Amino acid sequence: MISVVRFGGSNCDRDAVRALDAVGADAEIVWHEDGLPADTEGVVLPGGFSYGDYLRAGAMAARSPIVEDVRAAAERGVPVLGICNGAQIGCEAGLTPGAFTTNRSARFQCEHVHLRVERADTPWTAAYDEGDVVEFPIAHGEGRFEIPDDELAAIEDENRVILRYCDADGNVTEESNPNGSKHNVAGVLGDDETVAVMMPHPERAALPLLGGTDGRGVLEAFA
Amino acid sequence: MTAYTATVTVRLKRGVLDPEAETTKQALERLGFELEALRSADRFEVDLDAADADAAAERADEMAERLLANPTIHDYDVTVEER
Image (cartoon, rainbow over all chains, first blue to last red; front, top):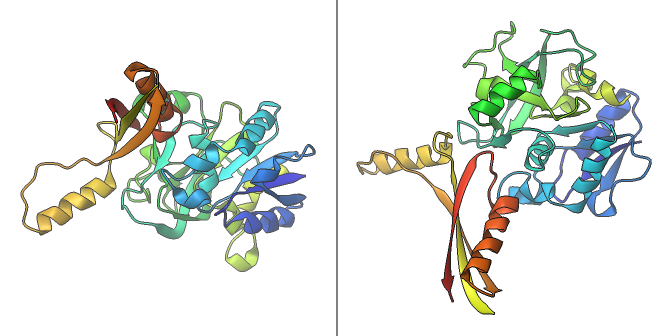
């Protein structure tokens, strides 16, 4: 079973379950206070505004007990995906490098973006080809990927960036960077490629009725 | 045990973009103020009891390390006063 962890303030948990269902994954919402079920075969930290984004987006949820369950599961090789607020939680918990902080615009931004698939040999991108351009929605106020330059160089050397903001032709440009993220980073891997976080929402691009299915490929990691 | 207030000030590392501070600076300029730059910081005042000031500072320091600051983007400092 894929556990979609619901915190107080999560609001993309049901979307994630429905999108996972669409790719054939057996997903259920897990209330954070109940801990991670023993039969968990994958974890989604969904989007939303856990704990009202108090202190910093994701800061409170990252210190909640279930995240220690998630950390232990990740160490056993269970795939873990953080989306949007889940990505902020993943970075705050140290499951993935860097931090997601206030957009360059200082505003909440809700729009469609293009993303370039930087590598296709991870569970999250195996459905794509390297260099593919996909379209996902973003909806965040704190999505600017920030990281010290030496750490950025290190994760780029290790090929841990899986998605970058780009234009419709796949050019990674400043104009196509919606939030001021360093080097247009939209999604990164943790220490193991079975752990990933991304600010764009693949689960909102998984049903034809919602205008596109480009996001299915990411979720197929759980199918 | 002595009662202390530990003040933890958390600020973005130099060089990290602060869009809210930039917006605030622009608003001050619209109001006619002249200024070179503006930086914002979060200040936490923690009341606690400890054996001495060093112990109080040490505990507040750990609070900053583990929650109040994010070491990826923040620097912080701690001061302690008897309360």
